[in-house]
Length: 320
Figure (cartoon, rainbow, N blue to C red):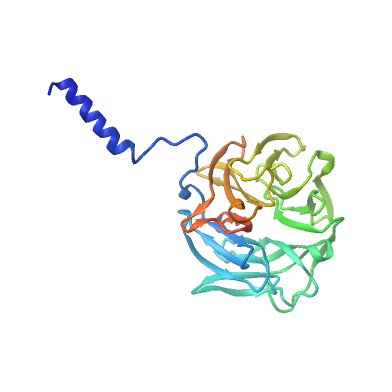
């Protein structure tokens, strides 16, 4: 065999051996699961708090005694959970589940669907907590404890609140109302300092989040879009979430964080359907451009369970 033919044979063998096991990735294709941070899921069917590692492994879950609405990782590594008969609780991971540190089960007639820490103690545990009280159309605030607890601050709203986050640039509260209004409320002054709603083109807001740099991100369910607005409510970008079984999503959650120095938005969307047509997808977006960085719809045990929220387990990054 001459050298030319021998080279062709060697090249062909290399392509068959290595190219078949490492095919080129198609544009927009799903990235490896470890591209994502660990996730905390609010599963709907069995009221489970589910933890998924950055490798897509579903490593533990914990059942509540009622619907689970929200969860936020804390600097201490514990979790602030909204749902069940405890209403709002701080829990830590324990063998075969989680252990409650404190809860708001004795706080009276409240119906919170979202809760966030606005201050922490020296150990990184929430010392002051705000909650979206849907049952009474208000925001409330109280201490992170179980005994001797009472509402220390409340703020009446024109519509029931469904989601609540903290604005990292101002430490104000950013809430989404059932009428699809997004309001930033300065709780120190008891007033709305920024808002968007139907007059600004919003129709069916499922969640909103603020970045430390001042931009606001909105999940618009009716169009299946994520939008970004600057502090003056000018739209910077808009993306229709791809690879979905339907045009719009039923529920969604947004989280803003940095990954390797880059600003990211983690968007979770639940698309309704019957049987195999329903789907839950996690997207990673460039916070500055809206470009799709990665997406995934699978764990190591198959698809994600039907969830209300999916948030990063990045507790250490939440500390002020």
